[in-house]
Image (tube, helix red, strand yellow):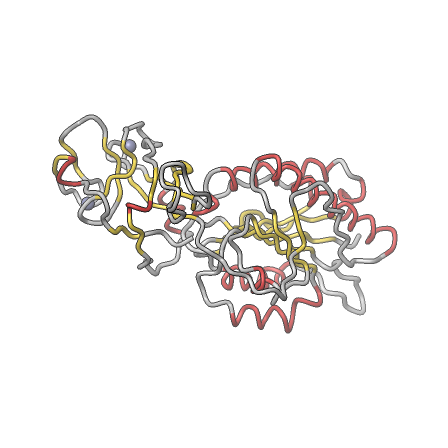
Length: 347
Ligand SMILES: [Zn+2]
Ligand SMILES: [Zn+2]
């Protein structure tokens, strides 16, 4: 039986924290459950999941549907697409069965790349390698989650660049149904007709559009994500802010600020393992940030207090505080001053 390999290359950079990564996680489970009930897919589809932030990581090696268990996605810093693409190509070299005179190899693999931001590494070598040796033998579908991706650049590696224009829960659900339907249609096509060219399902009624990648694409930074540590538990968390595109009623002239989305606990070891080594030197002024989260680890009222060391931690009722990063002690008044430049994360 010839296999139809399906790879999911999933961006798990910081801006994916919260609803997007939860939806991708649920979506993967939905895809697998539905494919398991489809006789064609069950016979032919093999699935693998690779996550990438600053680094790439195999979440689930290529395997049959009945063995597949949807992974829990980590979050890391950075969006190293070049590194991720190289990781995928190495993996395909290793796992795919090539057609020889004795055996018929795997069908053309389907690769879904989900990303919500722009590469933070140099992609030139990976793109060149992809285009000269892999592109013709694969079906790559690039899906921009939201409008923060340079789709013109994605057009350099794929003819199928789509944009999920809305990123609410319903849109994600409809989108993953579409992914499932596309896989089903392609597995029927390979089984019944021996045709492994991609058959994408219709996108009617889904907030998903095909992108004209010839068009230049201006990308603003949509998110600010801060890395904090809880003063009480010493656990780490991310605080996400999104650019507010509409003038608010309070400052009708000001469109350049970031509104709180939420604060999310993350595992520090996993986060560091998946992040680029290079420290970000981008700065954000806290005056651009609107909204203060409570600490997601201990419930302290102020989730974003900036120490003189430049790091972020949480502060509660207690007037005496100690920075969990550098150990400096002080009262809130001396630690927190509005408008200090702080380091941003990268993804
Ligand atoms: Zn806390
Ligand atoms: Zn400190």
